[in-house]
Image (cartoon, rainbow, N blue to C red; front, side, top):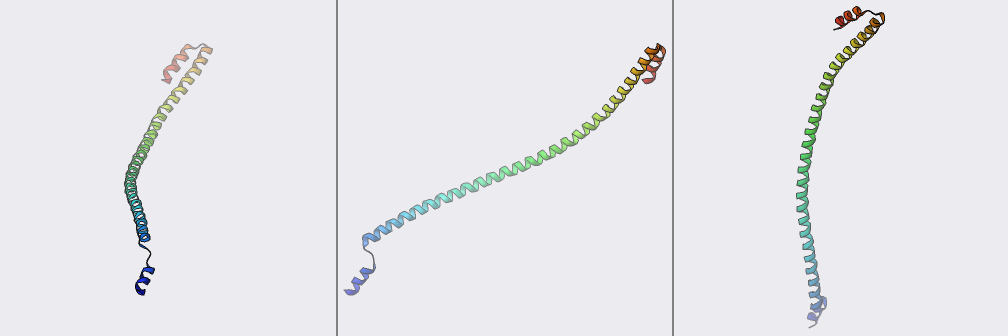
Length: 125
């Protein structure tokens, strides 16, 4: 009987063991719930990552398109500026001729020579 009593002394009483078992079961249940939530969060984050990567690819493609468009528009702008410069030079030449004509007309009128004025008009055109 002495050996049996020693074995009982080593182990805690049954109600305490049941309490500990219930506590561990609750803790296990709580940790399983946390693990399941973590697993769901990982799945959501993976889906969000995929979505954001797709958005990033689309934005990069749009950026490339916009850069190409900007380059094209810049080239078109340069061409237009060159095409405007040529007429502007022509306009400047016409303005100079007009001013020269006007100056000569003033001189002609001052001198009273209409013939000189008519002659100058035909020469400038």
